[in-house]
Length: 126
Image 1 (tube, rainbow, N blue to C red):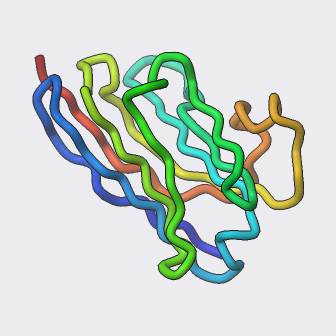
Image 2 (cartoon, one colour):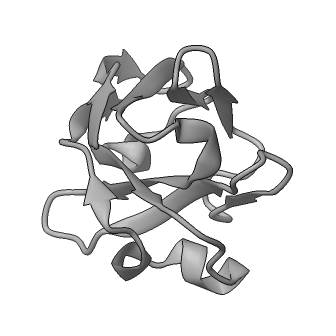
């Protein structure tokens, strides 16, 4: 199984970007997927996760109302739509996956995920 993240770039504050996380191998709809980010000099932090079945989505408070996670099962891809971007959203964004059904709180932890894609850099200028 491999994950391929893409879609990063440079945007002005208030702008939008859409990140993609494409999977090969295991059917993506059967796993939990998350986006996490790491800003320069900071710890990696949870951004959003989508559960197997897509019913439940969990957002970090810092992105709630601005970011939206979605899954296209036909394309085996998970998307992160980012709107109203702020300079503090600048980071390397990585997607990761976890099978089975970890508890909700565990989905917010980077250690929960066992397969990671390479990161894609998002830079938001003020």
